[in-house]
Amino acid sequence: MEEKKFDLNTVIGFVLIFGIFAWMFYINKPTPEEIEAEKAKQEQAETEQKEDEVKTTDFVTKSEAITVDPKDSLAMVAAQSKLGVAAYSASLPSAKDHVTKIENEVLSLKINNRGGYIEEALLKNFKTYDSVPLYLIKDGKNASFNLNFGTTDNRILNTRDLFFEPTVTKNGDNTVLSMKWKVSESKFLEYRYELKPNDYMLEFSIKSQGLQQVFNSGQQINLDWKLQAIRQAKSASYENRYTDIHYEYEGGDKDGYTGQGEFDEDQEEQVNWIGFKQHFFTSVLLTDTPFKTATLASKNVANTSELDDKDIKVTKEFAASVPLELQGGELNYDMDWYYGPTDYKILSAYDRNLDEIVPLGWGIFGVINRYIFIPFFAFLSGFLPYGIAIVVMTVIVRIVLSPVTYKSYVSQAKMKILKPEIAEITEKYKDNAMKKQQETMALYSKAGASPMSGCLPAFMQIPVFYALFNFFPSAFDLRQKSFLWADDLSSYDTIAQLPFEIPFYGDHISLFPILASIAIFIYMMMTTGQTMQQQQPGMPNMKFIMYLSPLMMLVFFNNYASGLSLYYFISNLITIGIMLVIKNVIIDEDKIHAKIQENKKKPKKQGKFQKKMKELMEQAEQQKGKK
Image (cartoon, rainbow, N blue to C red; front, top):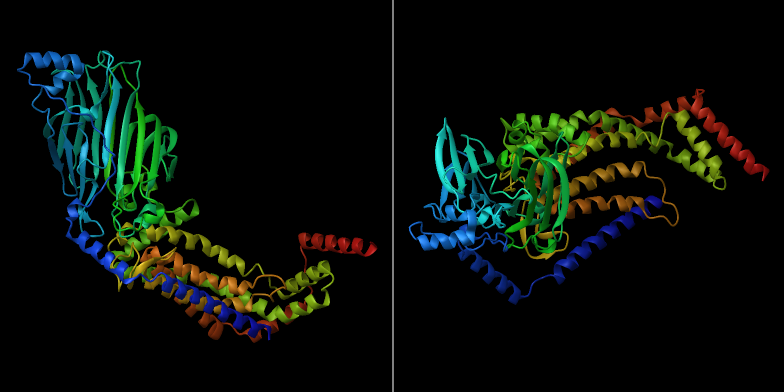
């Protein structure tokens, strides 16, 4: 009778939950006016040029450029008075906004004379979610690289306002670009870029020559690097979840954080590299001479509630401020830039711990991903379509874990068989909690069963579960790979677009999370009934609470990578199949019951710990009797 009552409560609960969802759909239904306004808004957006969609805040600031005609002696004198040592570079033919392009098979860079820094970085082999060329830096609007320093004639200069002279040469197959800000023909500050074929890593150096009498050694030279992360993915909120700053301390210690709201600053020491990471693409500044200190900051550009708005073009803003040290009065830093995919295989090949940027999980979870799932999935996807590779990997993982599933089910079966006897003990000693506990433990010991034995196999699966939870959202190879109705396994799948947004759920319906939720529900129906003890008065219905997990899966994973939902769907289907085979083919509950009865008749040898616990419980019982 109690079990029937629970089933009725469960059904009523789920009816109420889906009733609430239906009510939310109804009250959020847009009016005809709202539908017409949204249609007009979409038509207007479609008429705009996609190449001009990147909208940034007032992020890059530059002073008014000053150029000087070297033939005008009066102008040169005036410039000398106003600009000091910067007057010479302002008089050169290169004193104009002009870009120099260097490129290889995978990367195209544009460097402006003014400031001498990269104002455009295009990844040639990739597109955004809406098939637009993928830029990490676009038109110099979302990035800035500047050296701020004082001069001996009491001026403060910013290299972003100074004109550099470009020279392009070849070093074997490498393209070399030298950008020099000149004080004279033999005295200059140089940014040197060297790009290798088929490489996302760009050699970069900052060096000065003959500027000992120009730099004010009493004032700090600051390197300031800023970047706005241009949206690249279909879901801005999902991409933003994996967009953050990473950095490495000297000695190989890694860290990372995500700033929220206004700029949250964090100062670190002895930093080897700084990475402004987006979900699947990253910009990294590396140095051979560790930065003594680095002040790092990030903030969200848009409110979290607005991040799925179709107008959002930028997710986060990053900033790094690094003081540079003079050596013999000169600057001499060998560095590198990385503009490329957040791909574990590519990053790990550089052997500079850049693979730590990929969020594979900490401790044992990261180890499982690095040494098992990443190479195994790479092997499968080498000859199988990516969706099929996920299915095959899921099947193999579940088969490997099937002995754990078997032990878990055997334990559950034992607990189910002992349930009537546990109920008798509970009723017999309902007024004596100590004795009830003692007799229950004695029953478990004689029967060779334990309530914890069913939990331990589940705990053993947690590292695999969490490792895969990190693996799929970080698998670059899944980006823009389709399977069945999913256009992109690294993003959510969509079978229906809603004309409104449901809080926490989104403005679309994804099918893979629905299938995964149904599979989880069936699995829990199969397993919870045989181990859950009778509901205690005044306590919540634990079965009903556990049945809420499919609903949480449905809501939470609606905006997650469809590859992850596909894994959980297939995984639970296989688990259900394995448990049906175990229950109907492998395990005979009558034999288990007979074996338990035989074990109960045998004298059970107790260990020292068990004896001690029994003595303590008996002493406690005696003390209670004396009172």
